[in-house]
Length: 442
Image (cartoon, rainbow, N blue to C red; front, side):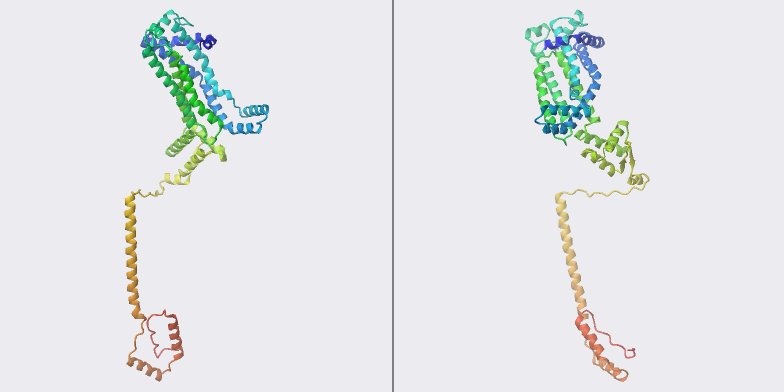
């Protein structure tokens, strides 16, 4: 570690100068010899470096997404040119050139931080040894050696001997407890950052070896940093813990505001956007309009999350436009004018006991209805039975009718017989035929 730190000795002077400037600021507030003054100086150094590295972080995000999108094509090239490694490499480079992807872009933030990290390590090592370095003179060196963070000297390590720790004015127990807690927090933040990237910001519809590699790194990196952490001074642990927390927060913001297409984070973002559009009736914000515009431009190439978003817009009565805005449909316009239709109310959910009671009541009602129907049928049949029986004709009326038929008009038995036969055959005419009046015309 000391050899690598000496390799970056050219940057120790700028790093020490930045720390001293922040120390002057915090020393005026907390005191020049306190751990707060020196600890916050290191934290401020991290923040300053990470702000300068934001453009590289953006390139890292873009490169990671491009690599994820190219995994199926890369796998196809590897299978196609399995026996020709040279041709395989040429096709890979051609693919990177056509898509503008640089595999090393994902490592740029770490590579860019490395010189500052080792320069800080060199500065703290010199402080532990009582040697001046860069712009840190003897007075600043004595002040830094007196600074303690939660009882642990700024330059102490987990592996330091008790004599060396006592020379810095602390106990070995305090140093090991503080360094152990910092190492655990450093490894946990590294693991959570990688897990957040894998679980939320990866297109789960594409299964590639790249995902398996990232999953392995998610468990390997924290173990590596935990093993290296026991050789880091407390000040370096503060630096590394701060940069991990910064990375975690920065990545959380990117995942929340600009997620990878096809990921769980994109689904959550589009659902929030749908609620916002439904509430305000428009797409607010230039960035949101650009996202809607990009989804509209995809057409049939939209992923499942984007199709679900468009279905939600249609149900809410909106239609997305090519410029990223939305317009109201006919149903929403009618509702705005006061002609909104009443929504169908969903029935309340019943318990199992209520459903069984309701089923029993319905069965009882149906049985009662059947009984009433049977009673009505029996009554109607009883009323209709007498009318179907042939009533006997009194002799007086029969004789009178026969006399009238003899005097004025002869009877027509053929027609009567035919009518009787029809009645006998059909059996549907109810009651007795009324005899025709003698004066009626034939």
